View 1 (tube, each protein chain N blue to C red):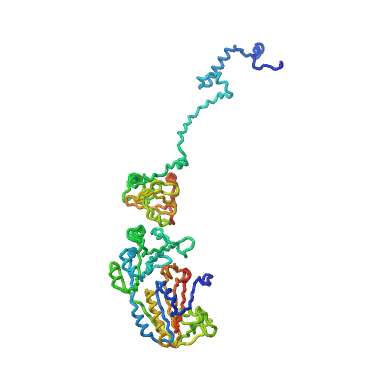
View 2 (tube, chains in turn purple, red; view 1 turned 90 degrees about the horizontal axis):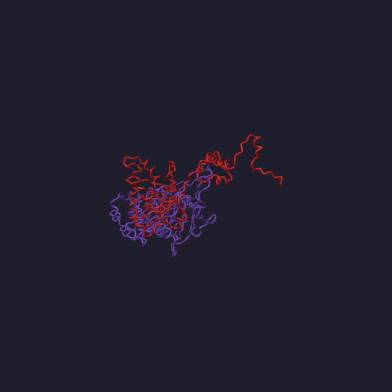
Length: 359
Length: 221
């Protein structure tokens, strides 16, 4: 085996235990600042079919948009900023751009336009940016952050003229963009971008029922787990990922490919429901899903917990807030929430090598 | 002292006849010497032989022609003095773009002459080579790429070129100093756009004209 492969590259996992009833529950903050989510998977142990409320919620998630070949200067026009950005909760992410070799762009709901550009583009663009944190001594990638809701960005200002000049004349960057807007007014996006090729995409929902699954025993009080009584939070993170991807966890110790097993202690669960939603999912929708999961425990259930796992886009320029995100080997940036029936929750925040520590 | 023999005294007649020498009268001898000197040293005209013989060394055979050395021109100022006198600086009231437009026109003419008329079918390679060695004073350049983003897009006429910087005047009548290092300049003339890598151009204009540039595959700034 190659020595490089034997060591695992740097990765970070942050676990937190808290309660939904707490006044300043930090989970909303974590969810809201993680803007670009690509998939959500919900795991409900001891459940054969989705409860009605949750099902109608998932079905009514709406859709997201893909705009082809959109020039970047469309975002800086006064009209766009008034119509979309000032109302808030508008998300845009360049599509099919690889963060480690292409230029990439995204628009945060805070009105920040983030560009992650390679060296040559940066030199031509003429906009001030920072060296990427993860490109080594000789910078090959630059990170530009532009606040589009800045008061100094009125049309006659030098700042605006410069921005317009670089994006319109100097280096007209074009991207395919994914759009999502929580203030649902579908027609606005369609009419405003009628010049371009706008396509609406529904969310892809796939669900499976797993039979006879070994499930770890979790106690909401014990984040670290107690030997023989409950599993630790860190231990089940990997298992959660395996289950939501429908990977068999009944491996023997001598298995060549994988020796991953369900952590001890565990119980056999007759059936478990896994539902995966793929698409450009906004944080607001995820908060609604979490709310539904809390309500799921209003009626007594056999299993004391359910989980929700959110994967961020591996190629998005940012992970949490405006923290730079890199790909390195997998570009992981994800969080998962374990919701307990007593309104407690555990939240895991995980990032790969080229990422800052999650908040 | 009486023993000292006077060697300069005239040879006694007796001894002279013994060796077969002809004794000349002192006057005659003088005339002989001066005529002999005149024959041997043709340049000896104004100065009399006596005066000339006062010198210690007399070259008889080799006629030394005096080299006509050009006199040094009245020596001007050194660069340092010029700098101290601020001769290189352009006064604020003369920093106007329109003032230098004629210079730009002149430069365009110069480049057209240099490239034999700049027809559309001219080889771009040739134009490039010529431009590399041409004088760039008066050229309208734009900073096309730079490691420092605030230089990007500066456009103006080159007024001065030094080893490391260009001084250009922009349309807004601002004099800007742009380093050559880490910048790529684009020069446009009659539809030919040439990109010049400033990092490879770091020398004085006069030195550059004699420099042999080598083709390189690809360059970073």
